[in-house]
Amino acid sequence: MSTILPWRVAMLYIVAFLSCFGLTGCWSSVELNNRSFVRIIFLDKVIDGVEVTLSFPLANRLIPGQSGGTGELTGKPYTTVTKTGHDIGEAYRLIQSDLSRRITFGQTSFVVIGKEFAKAGISQVLEFISREPRFHINTNVYIAPGKAKEITTIPIIFERFPVDILLAYSRELVTLDTTAKDCLAASYYGGDMLIPMLKVETKAIPSEKKQVQNWLGTDGAAIFKNGKLVNTLTTYEMRGAMWILGKMRDAEITVIASTDGKPLDFMINQSHSKIKPIIEGDQITIHIHCKADASLISSQSTIPLQDPEQIKNLEDSLEELVKIRIKKAIESSQKVGARENRSSCRDHYKTAGNH
Image 1: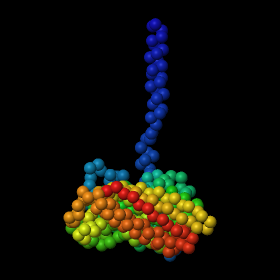
Image 2 (image 1 turned 120 degrees about the vertical axis):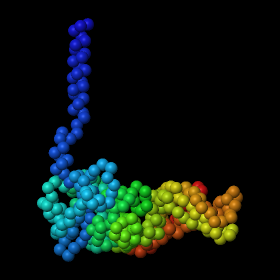
Image 3 (image 1 turned 60 degrees about the vertical axis):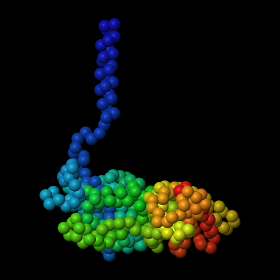
Image 4 (image 1 turned 90 degrees about the vertical axis):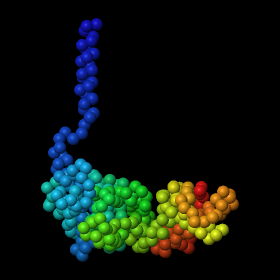
């Protein structure tokens, strides 16, 4: 008994010691202290090549509890570095040569591409992403209305970093959610794609010292064919595309009551869609089935909502409005020959909803 007990104690110590090897992490802070983490990449076309702007958080200014903005004592907790090269790789190397830390793309969340760059083609962007091993393919992609670098001039009021604004757009589904993976798949299989667009407009901001500043928002979407921007969708048409993709949420739709002609406002809580292509000879019929849940949020009408017949009329009106949005999105894409040929394709729409 006395000889067995020490062995059991020894085994417990050995197991506890070996389990420590499973708790691996950074053996020291040297590795992190020698790295600069890119959060956003901005790409613009210039006469002599490509202008690359990288946005970095500043580790020496990341003070817990500090609010966003441009504090006079510490300054912004982020910065951008811009270089121009014949291609993305050369510009990236020039930026690296000026930094005291090693650049890593492991934390990159967004790639913002200037409109002129997108018109010329984004093949070299996809090539860089596919060959950079630290780059996450779930990184979101946006198209800027002009130069992508202009996005860096927007004031940061509600958030602490510019990347937080773009993250909110994707999280709240206020626009399309296109990732680098989607772009790579479309490029590989020869398909077309939709990439959400941003907009920069001048607004008066009373809370800031410089009251009139650029303000960032979401816009429509860019249609890409063969890797090049060929057309754009308006915000209205882009929302039709979101219906097709089943990503519509928290959208408001106004219906005019048939009884007194007054408006009723509905909020779309969630939506689902199913796309089924049917090939018959040289004809392709695409069935798009959308289903959504909506809630009445306000009404100026005296329509009796307890009447099942009136409820059915409201549902039919909502379905018709959704069909119009879907048709607008498809017609805009067909104008540039995206996805299918107009002469050999027929579209059938069906919507269903619970209100």
